[in-house]
Image 1 (cartoon, rainbow, N blue to C red):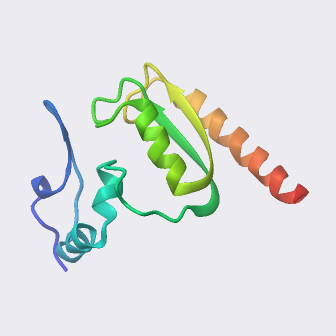
Image 2 (image 1 turned 180 degrees about the vertical axis):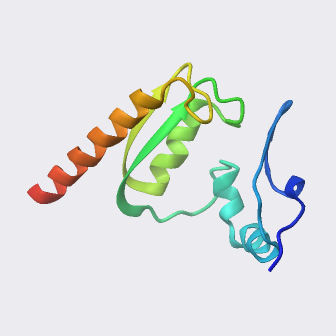
Length: 120
């Protein structure tokens, strides 16, 4: 199973581009499964939320983010039973310069989630 040319799949937003290596069968699956509605944040897909908690980082300065922060939060909230968000206004797609803050937030979320699961 070979990969398609790198420029075949990814995110384009204005002048920014982030290409994702993908195999032909995987791309066909995405294009025919309805997953594209979720990936594109169209909001049209019927989604049964995953019954697990989630942590989502959203960078306010992410040039690859293709929807406003609130819209991204609304879509992610439909995908999971319970979601905690870390939105950093100056953060980019890879949270450069915010690594420690993101790591601390993820670690705190893991501990909090583990404690909650032990209480229920």
